[in-house]
Length: 57
Image (tube, rainbow, N blue to C red):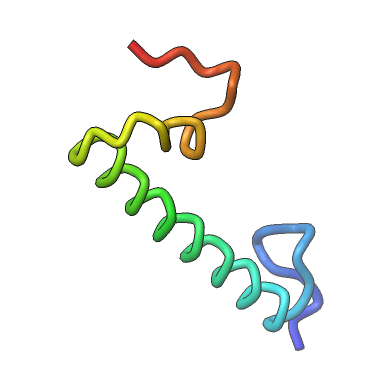
């Protein structure tokens, strides 16, 4: 088992793989929202991809 990874706060391969799965899930969700909100113009879903303090023009 690795004592530390280049990510600092993650220790071991299992933690790294868990982090990697989370990243892939977030990217999948972002890709879906990008397609639905921007391409399909489902503006009611905009709040799912942008925090309340983000201004969209």
